[in-house]
Length: 360
Image (cartoon, rainbow, N blue to C red; front, side, top):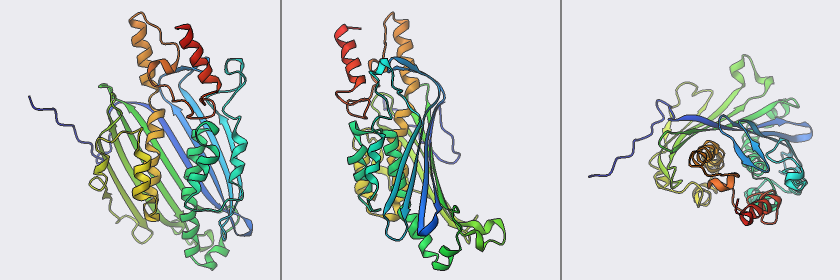
């Protein structure tokens, strides 16, 4: 009997299969500031649409599970980072007796280490050195890396408009905005589908406007959809396309398929080696920065969409008369040192060890 042929995925029509379980949205808005500076206001939101996870001595239920922000101030001429101010309005772990008074906000001050750095290709690596793994929060790290990825091209594009345009901009006026939206879907066959949409819009100065469309400078869009094998967490099928347009091309620019170029992704693990492969291929090419930014966020978005699978494992165990008392016991727990709370000597790993020793 011949093997089943994988059902292809197509962007047109843009239809994902399965039940919607999670949305991750990242937004970076770049504003003109005083004294030749630009300000980036960035937000990451995780909205769990269904499912719940027992972790940290409590139940993490559907609803808003992460809401974090960054306020970054940069000198546009030198690229010097003058402010890198984080906030975490909604986090997974608040300090309590169940977490030994540890919480997600404990290491947030470490991001001040980015102040005094200059915008450059190594910023993402520097952020990881300061705040990656057991030193920080993976979600704020993801947001910070998106900011330092988007800012250089935005500043360069604004500079190409000439000094007259730069002087014409008002303080607080938006230069550009990036929206990266990742939606997760749980299929009945156990696979996941992940839809990714990135939209960059660069704007012209208010002072040049005759009508509202004169604010439109340029747009870059990316759409992708991935099907991930539920058993192996490898990519089973995908499609991806990009479109760039200026005011002159508005309505006439066409979508360009990237499926053949990205064929190396077929069968690739989502969680192992994807980011290094992307960085090797696209990390040194500013023109591919939107593609890299979207795909580097594929794995983090996928992880957040697994909550419903955790819930299903717990329900299946209950039907069999067994008990799964923590997220980690479902097989979907985070690895040691994935963040500050889950560091090897942290509260969550101590709790995990205590449960294993108790045989619960």
